[in-house]
Every structure is written in C-alpha cells, then in structure tokens.
Image (cartoon, rainbow over all chains, first blue to last red; front, side, top):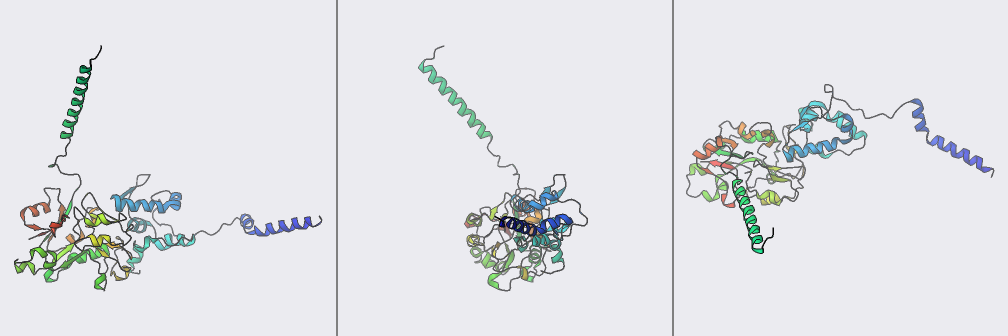
Length: 132
Length: 251
C-alpha cells in the first residue's frame, strides 16, 4: 500500500514532462511557425474569402476546370461582384500569386504531395525565365 | 340526367377526337423552323488551294499553332505530335488524284482536325474525355484522358497524336497561357477554342500571311466562309465516310 504514493507521483511527473511542449508553448505565448508564404503585393482580395480558399481552393479549382473545359464558362463572378477569367495560369498565377513562394511553400509545409496540376499548367514566372 | 350507353360512348369519342386534334395541331405548329438561324454557331474552316504557299516553304500557320499551344518538336518521327501539318495531295484526296491536273496534285496540303459533325472519335472514348460541343468543335479534356488511344484508332484522318513522353523538354518556348500536355494523353487541334472564347480567330488563320485560311460560322449566311463555299468548289476529306468534316478545301 505504501508504494501507491510513489506510483501516483511518478505518473504525475511523467504526464507533466510528457506534456511539456504544450504548456511551455502556452506559457510563453508562442505558436508553431506557419508556412513562410509570400502574399500578393498589390491585390487585396481573393476570388473567395481567405478561409474558404484555405480549406477548399482545390474544389474551387476543380469547378473552374469543369467550367472552362466542359461547360465553356470562362468568367467567374465573385460574391461581391468582381469578375475574373477562369484560368489558373492567367488569373491566379498571372495576377496575384507566385507558384514557388505561395503554392509550393504551403503544400510543402502541410506535406501535400505535389498536385498534378503542374504537370501541364505552367508557372508564368518560370516560363518567362525559360527555366523548366 | 341519365346517359344512355350510346350517348356515353359518343361523348367519350368526341372528347378523345378533340384532345388528339388539338395535340396534332400544336405539335405541327411547334415543329422547328429549318430556315431560322440556330442559336449556336457552327465553326468551320476553308483552306484555299491557290493561296496556300506550303510548296514554297511557308509554314507560318504551323509556327503560329505551335507557339500558341505548346506543341513539342519530338525528334522521333513515330512519336510526332501534330495539330496542323502538311501532307502530299495523294494522301489527302486519294480518291480524287487520278487524271487530275498535276499543278494541283503536286501541291502539298494543310491538314488539321476536321471537327466532324458526326465524329467517330468521341463515340469510342470510354471516359468522356472528348466530345462534340454545340458549336461543332470536337473538344478534349486532357484531365480525363487516360491515354487508351481508342480515339486515335477511330479517327479516319490521323488527326490525333499521343504523348509518348513528357513533351516539355521538346518545347522551344513555353506559352504560359496554355497548358502543355503530359505523358500519356492524346492531343489534337482544338480549333483554338481558348482564343474563340476571347473573341479571337484561330492562331493559324491569324498567322497565314496569304489569307489562305478562312474561318467562320457556317450557320451565319453572311459569313465569309459561307460565301466562299457558295462561290467556289470545295472538297472535304473522305466525305463517303459520313463524318461530315468542318474543314473544306477550296479548289
């Protein structure tokens, strides 16, 4: 019976040590470093709210693909009335984002295997410097 | 009121005749007016034998197409990727090459996808990666192509090519606005649907200095192509196959 107290102390000590990263981070008010992405310099708004884009950009791009290729719809109307060309290379990459500094950084950070988009779709910045 | 059996049958027959008659009249009235202009255009091309300068080494149209669509220059002939290319007259019109003026038959011709009105290639595609649009363009969705090449076997005009390897190393200047293809898909001329969507004419037509290529809407009686087909004798490749090519050759 006398060992119980030692067992309890040992367990508590183990738990405290095991959870060190969590409470250490909470105590020092730091957060894990996010991906080092480069945001567009001139544009202020994306084609959809940032939270939606973060979670569902792949769905939006899939819809764009079906619109442009299969339905012949080449314009996208945002919720607040802006109009964009339905094109990954001309709109997303041509007007705002850098593939290497935006798409690739976040995909690498979150461990997403490289999407097959780039097997065919071009990065205008790279093709301009004729590096493939 | 009490109906006799005879009265009941007469009333029923009269009602039936009335309903059927009305249906008949309305359906006859609603029959499509053949002379009316359809909503959708039907894109077509006419290539002028007399203006084309292929035999003199002009390749402006091919160059314009290659630049616009990132077409690779594959060194191996068997793996060649072609959207618009030239071939001897005898290959293009084998049925019409005997006893014809040699001035005509010695002239190589420009070939491209015929964008058939009854395309055999779309019917064999197992994934729906190729289909005919309302405007007559035989379209491809490279996202869906699995590279089975049934369409290549079905096409009687050899208009489709296969990417046996990644085409990117063989493309001199990549046009970032148009995707390259990837290893294992079939590709062909798309009648510049991406340019038509922006109100431009096809790249080859724009690139031709001799104005030997006429592009337009067959459904528009005032279009240049309609007047060209009206005033000149035009040939289609293998019309006996019933594919209905949208590419015409003006004699």
